[in-house]
Length: 237
Image 1: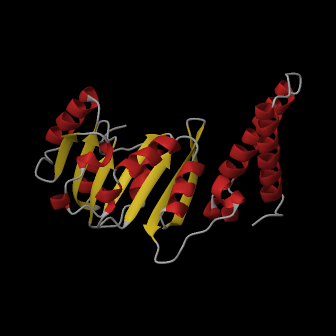
Image 2: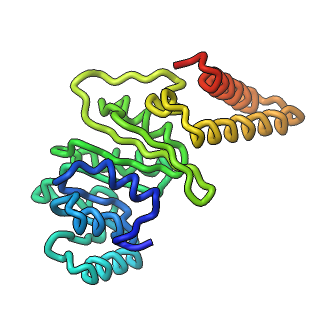
């Protein structure tokens, strides 16, 4: 993978960036995504934010190599601290982290979202945390994708501000309102796999002391399995 040939995962993330956007890519690593967006004419300008010194240096080197220093600024900063008011950022991409970490980044930089109209988020795990955040902060899920690459399954969530309160059902929070309707092969594989893992966990804790915590955990997993089965069987939309 390089700035001109992204992985399928990042290519799909890039596809949701509005043409002409001013993008902040948070946790940019080698800055492949912003370099691709700008060089392909998909984004007008970009900020590449990285909190770790090594990847920050790699990103600066990549931007220089692509001769995009006039269009992409690389900043060493934690989360949305990489964004300055004068940047005029309109879209934010955060890819390759866990859902709770992405939520933490958004929560810690809420004031930085002023003027931002779209969030393109690709959690490696626990996308539910992002959907719960979207509901709480009145961001609507306008698009979702689920893809399989190198035997790993990834979800991509596209959020836009909503003028109305946002409310999702428990099944939609867990599995995704758009993804539930599409029911792709990758979607069904993911949730069949998750359900099987939860069933194994329940079986493994049956023989342990049934403390209140264990019973609560078991009930939570049983409820999740029920939701998944209903969705996969077309009983919950």
